[in-house]
Image (tube, rainbow, N blue to C red; front, side, top):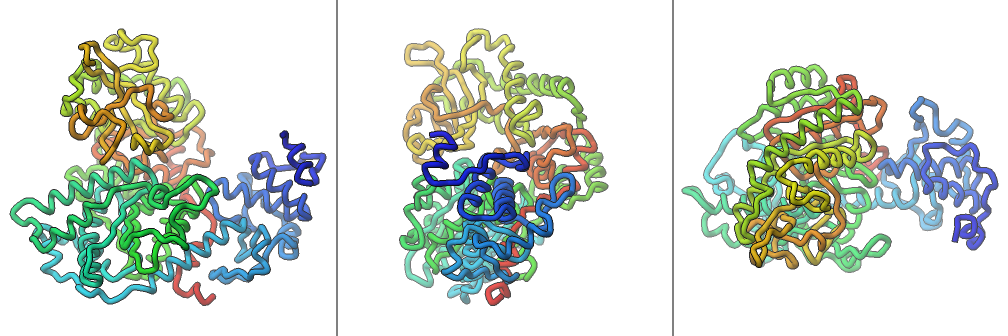
Length: 632
């Protein structure tokens, strides 16, 4: 059925002329505009609804009535804004932030409140999330078994260092709370702090309920969830060893923490697909006493609402992430808004970590300057970093081609040193891990996905350079070849491969002695379907032709890199300073993926534009979270 047929079938009244609609609109925005007209909306309301849909597509939960286009012209004129308050399709509310809705108004598709126009579902989600977070903050109780200084020394392996003061504060303040937020940049010890917080929560739960807690740990993506589990296990091993190891009284609580299997938030909720209520919801709460969500900056408004709906009132929620990173690809900037609201009222349910514990702190001043939007400090920090931070202007496609050729040679040298084109025994886990480890050594990140300066085109050019390597001559013309790096783009729960997982094509000796191409991935716990019986610890092998949908990963978007770190990073920005993706959070997220050294491939004015432009997503979540909003 074509578009006109569908409209006729549902008795829509389709306008004959489409002239005059904004060029920036998507098909969905036009469909919303048509729907409003077909259901009795006036032209001003239909136009506003189309712009509200467009704003949602750009990540905003609401459209400010005073919004302007790229040329500074208002999206809605004064008469159009005034018409909204009288429209039968718009619920008009005063400026109060509580957002409670009368049942009689619940069917209206738009909500006008506080100078913002909402699609109904986004208004409901924003109000529900704020109410749930406020309730959790107010439900804090005095702990049954407060953590003493001696307890904190035990949890920090006998140490009491000034640099760990914020970590100790987070651990001390979490028992008895229903909501705790931990934020900080790379290298500030978020994961090790979370482990200690969980030990304190587990002991508090046991003291209050005389049983071990049901604990769940999750992240928005499978890769982030897997890395969280790995980090918690590594931290637990460190706490349990050495001269100042945890005492036996803490061991049951440590086991309770380690018993939790990492999962994506969707899997945690029992997601059944778009538009279908998950298995766990308000009427069927999640069987968990403590829930930790890492990389919370990647949560969108709808997913956080679903999570809060599914939690029992007495469950503890710990949100962890870097509030200065890029926000989710979906609606809202929930972590940023939550941190902003909680910092404003100075409560003890938020702790920001700011001390970097990395042995090589050369890049820390660069990240701090970007986070603060300080151009002068950024220039000084780059100069002070010496060869650890290099800038390469990339004004056009030819300059990019040269940079990509040099990058491919560097990658080829790394693969050669790791012996990626040489066959290895399928059970030689150490050799396979060495090959796979190349992927953590260097990574090209791009602000864009498509276009000549996007990750897709850059990855294709790197692949073309790499395939000319003489060591790969036996695989000329093949889709798969040693060194091909791929990223999974769709979850495969049976194989435990998830969107964002990165694998490397390697050569293993087949049963008949002939070389066999396999794709190596880092091991996930309890992962069926992979050749784990022969791959050795830490690595899984898959037949390339059995992988879920995937794409080359020689270059990644900055969004896709969230939750990962690499020894060396190159960040490519488009040469057009008008690109809407040139924002401070994108620059910070990309550069902060580097642990030791970085390259910035960008024109000076482009980098300056990104540094000076803070990402802002429109909505009222932050003000709704404030304690006074409940009675507004």
